[in-house]
Length: 53
Image 1 (cartoon, rainbow, N blue to C red):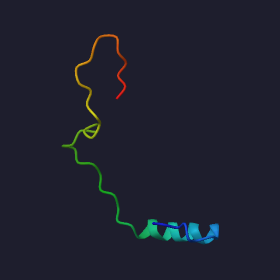
Image 2 (cartoon, helix red, strand yellow):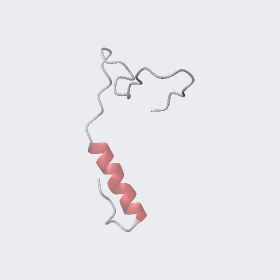
Image 3 (cartoon, rainbow, N blue to C red):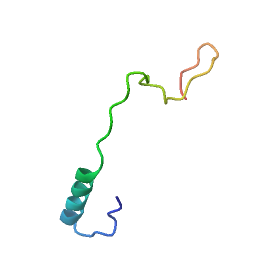
Image 4 (cartoon, helix red, strand yellow):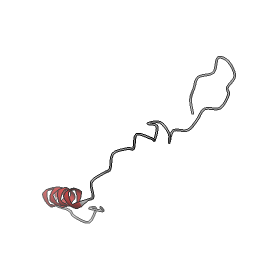
């Protein structure tokens, strides 16, 4: 939701809360999908290197 056009902070907050309330509920992650499945995988590295991605 874009609230940049609303100048009054109270109105902006009300609009955001209303949008959040009518948004569909987020479904829980299925048990078949691993928690880190979307993470970038680290390939084989040289010894002594840090695991930065």
